[in-house]
Length: 294
Image (tube, rainbow, N blue to C red):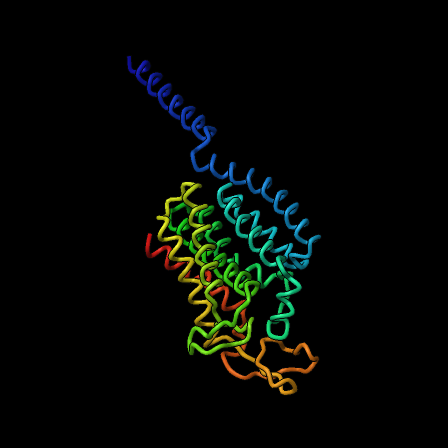
């Protein structure tokens, strides 16, 4: 009988060991999620490369901007198809508005703004960096916080871009958001009625996209985050953003070398705090406000 008990005990131990060994081969929920994310990353990488190649051909992106945009797009789609859809919504509308009336807009603001219609690596990261970090955070540690920060950042970038492009194209004399005085078109911190309406529309557009994708973020939180980010962009542009001056033309500008060919000198603001840095802060403010309101 003692020998029988020993055999029964040994059999039970062997059975438990085989069960534990078998369970190791059963896919866990997290393992399945990681494999799905990897599959999306591969598919998303191919799709992002195709989209950015087309954008490069249409001169919407520089080479460095195209490479960076492909990485951001891959991260977004790896986090989920809805992430990729929302990012694509921003990119397509921003590129279309940037190209709309491009020649006329350059005539209006070419003497002031530093960069043209082709977005480089700094512009891509300043507008999509916080969104990409949110997607990466969701991949590493899935939590609702990443939806809030991601959509708030993207809504802010969209609102700022729509406000700038539509406001410039619509014409009219912008006024400084700080002093209320009229400023030349393209001046950072200058706002117009049409630009403000377009900015609000951009924030609502992205918030609606998140709602359609059933993201766990209140519509108002996403929309208000976007509007708050665009407002922060205008305030920082009028106060802390680096300003330069062309002595030959006696004109304020953001360009290191003015359109007349004269090197410019710093005339105010924080050194190095350029439009790209302002856009990055704008995106961060949108993420923070959306998170707090969620």
